[in-house]
Image (cartoon, rainbow, N blue to C red; front, side, top):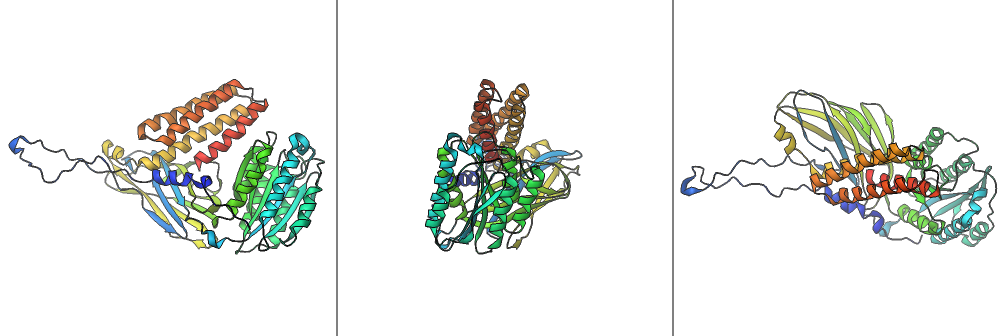
Length: 471
C-alpha cells in the first residue's frame, strides 16, 4: 500500500498532552528564613503545594490517565465532579504497516447524480484502489434498492479490472443502507485476521429508507461486527443524510465519522481514511469505569456505551499512532468524613490483546474549602469543561435542527459562557478558541433558517466540530 504519513490529523494529541502537564510554578519557598523575624525580615507564609496530579500508567501500548477535575471534596455532602480519562497511543511505526482488509460500500441511489457526487466518489475510489498493493484485500459494494457486490473480497492482484468496474457504476434507486452495510461487513469477515486492519468504509448522501432503518438496530449490527474484529467508518456527503445515524454507526463500529460537505473533497476524505488505517496501533479499545463511592450522572461526547450506573463500558474501537483521546464523565461523589479518602472509580482499559491493571481514582475528603480549591487540576479541568461546553452545543444543534431556534440560541449562549469563563479561570487558549467558535455558531444559527441548506450545513459541521472537542 502507498502510505501517507500522519501529520496535522493527529496534531491535536500534542495539544491534549500539553494540557495534562501539571503546573507547579509560583510555589512559595518556606525553607532557610529567619522565623524569629530578626533583622527586619518578613515571615514567609506557609503555602501548601497543589495535590499531585493523577499518575499515568501503561496499559498495553496505551498510556492511561484517570482523575478528577478537583481531587478533594467537602465533607458531609454529595459533590458533582468531572472524571477525565485520557488515552495516549504510541507513534505508529511506519516501517511495519499492517495490510488492510477493506470493503468500500458506496451509495448509488439517484440522489448521487446531483452536483456530480457519483463522479467524485468514483474518482476517490480509483485513488484508493491505486494505493493498495498485493498484500491488501479489497472488496466493493454498491447499494440502492438492494445491495450489489461489485467486487468480492480478494487480494489486490488486478487493479485494472477493479478500475473498469468503478468506471461502469451508474446511479439509480433508493437508499437501502442496511443491505449495503451488511454485505460489506460480510466481505471483510471472510478474510478477517489479527494481522490486518479490517474495515468497512461506508459512503452515503441520503437517509436510510429501505430495509432496516431503525438507528438502534443498525447500531447493533455495527457493534456486532466490531466485536468480531471488523470496524466501520461512515462518511456523510452533502446535507441530506442523517448525521446522527452515521455518527452512531461509526461509534458502535469503532471507526471514524466524517462530514463531507463538498463532493470535490471526497478524494481527500478517502485518503485520510486510508492514512488512518495504515496507522492503527490498537484495536478493539474499550474503557470500563467501575464506580465505588460515586454515582454516574452522564458520559459526555456521544460515545457508544453499555452497562449501568455502577459499571459503564465506553467503546472507542481503533486508536491511531500518536493519537490522544479523552473520555469525560459527570459523576456525583458520595458524602464522606473529613480526613479520609473516597474510592471514586476504577478505570480499566482493554483491547484485542487483553485487559490491563485498572487506574484507581480517589477523592480526599476535607472540611477546608481552601483545600478543595487547591486540589484543582487545571489540565484535566480544561479538558472536562471543553466537553461540558460541547455537550450543550450539541443540544443546541439538535434543537436548531428541530426548528427550536430560540432554545438553540439560549443553549449556545450558555455553552459559550462555560467555555469563556473557564478559559479565563485556567488561562487556557483551547477554551478561548472554543468560545470564539461557539459564538460563530450562534451567529450562523441566528442568520439562517433551520430548513435552509445553510442551516443544515451548520448543524452537520457544528456537530462534527463538537465531537472533536469532546474526544
